[in-house]
Length: 127
Image (cartoon, rainbow, N blue to C red; front, side):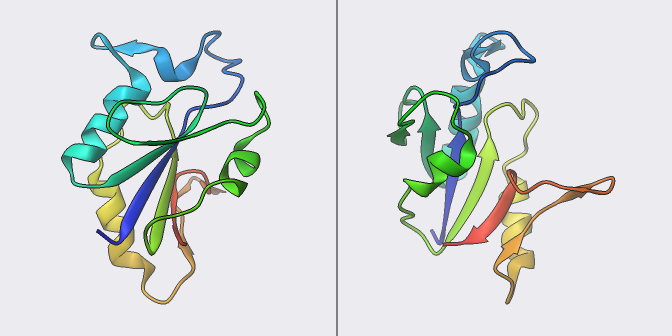
């Protein structure tokens, strides 16, 4: 497949008050639930953060809570395109990745805009 998905699981989780990647949804940790859905769609998935998730690649944070730019700077893509997303999108539909792939055409990136705010941490980039 020409698209790899990167799931960001680091961060301080200040609003939740606990490690957001491990918050259970239907008895399954949030990050694991998201990764399973992506793997079921045939995507190569790499987790960047504190702990690995079974079935996918993993790049550990060098230091806690340094932000997504720090984590992404150490990541080496294995595909032509990389879809980057946070782990706390509980109702994420993996079909969004294909939708963005259909729209990237000659662009370097495709990012959704909610209201007037661009969402660069839930976007598709050329590697």
